[in-house]
Image 1 (cartoon, rainbow, N blue to C red):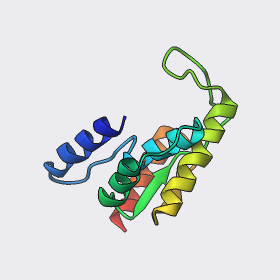
Image 2 (image 1 turned 135 degrees about the vertical axis):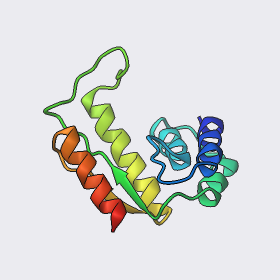
Image 3 (image 1 turned 120 degrees about the vertical axis):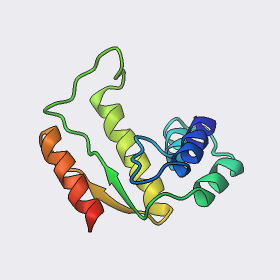
Image 4 (image 1 turned 45 degrees about the horizontal axis):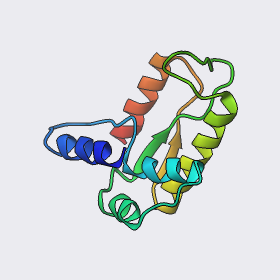
Length: 118
């Protein structure tokens, strides 16, 4: 996972304009912690070195729309624990977390675009 996120980070650096990530280098730390796997120093160092914008959008768990399927194998409980693990990592790394509203996709899009313009 770390290699993939570093690759995505490098490719994004070659783009012009805004780039949004669904996952980032710090997520690796969160997933390792969540599963009880020791976090290697190189992963922590990568999360400290390869920084994203100071403000990071987070999508809180939303039970009313949550569904398991072939792509989303986590239970709601696992999704909530994952969310909290990732929030902890990003907070520890000094990011400002901006929760997405629990609203339709179009509303979320307008929210993100308005927040990135400010």
